[in-house]
Image (cartoon, rainbow, N blue to C red; front, top):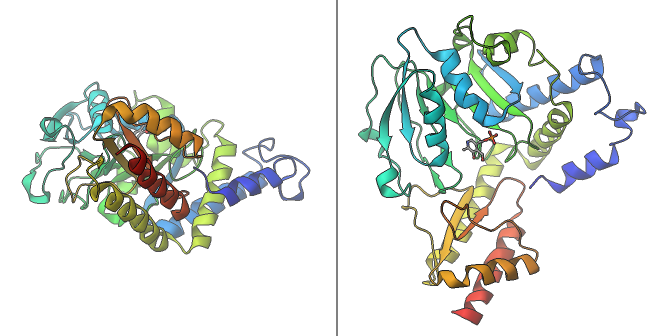
Length: 348
Ligand SMILES: Cc1ncc(COP(=O)(O)O)c(C=O)c1O
């Protein structure tokens, strides 16, 4: 979901942006109006996340999947090796891509637990020669979320925050690189956010394609080529909306309330089940199954009729999944819970 006021504002000014008589989609990304928009979006994001000055913010393209390649291409040393947590489908994909570019050591492998648990904070050790450590704070498909930030000492920590960025405050200074595809909590698809510590910018070899060099993108203000201007504009509106809500502390409290309410509804019934270990449960993506899986189709069809959409679980996990990103109002979660109670009353 995108916040409704954001979409309404975009609708209202679609054909006439800031009285210019043109759409924001039509203006040059190199003109002063768009450059001011881009600068404001970055300033608002820096404000929201309290991003320190020695970090650069990039607005790129190619999705988080491109970062799976950009990270190793930019951070690998001549001996090239990195430590990766394997905690679900997205970290698995990150590892598969990284292996094309350097040698990967998997320091925690949660596959045997069907990705329903995460390693204890003190159970993982890192290779001293690792160029970086990579992890996925929130595994979108399996609904597991780290409750802690791995302590990697001097080794840069790289995190794929695609599905939990902006869901609450973040100590940015603990990370070497934070990246996220925009399409969950930032804006529409097409934009990829990278927050990178400045000393990690200039490490790419000369053979790395220009579009994939962090340093070049930083020098060019993320405009080495034509950026996705409309997505950037919408992200800027989302940042303004988040600030108007009271910022990320407020969002964190709302997100916690939404998740707590849904988990409580699932746990108090034998009719519904969530397989993720307590303490590893995601606040953003909540997969749940019906005890009687033959009712899945009926559940989804009736939910759709009740206006509750996009509840089908990922095909790898099955069942249902509720995604409670920032723009999902608490009333939306309450509507789902009421529907679940009523469905159980009729079919339980
Ligand atoms: C945690 C995570 N990483 C990576 C991706 C892939 O993102 P993209 O489609 O932007 O490449 C997703 C998409 O859902 C995701 O949830």
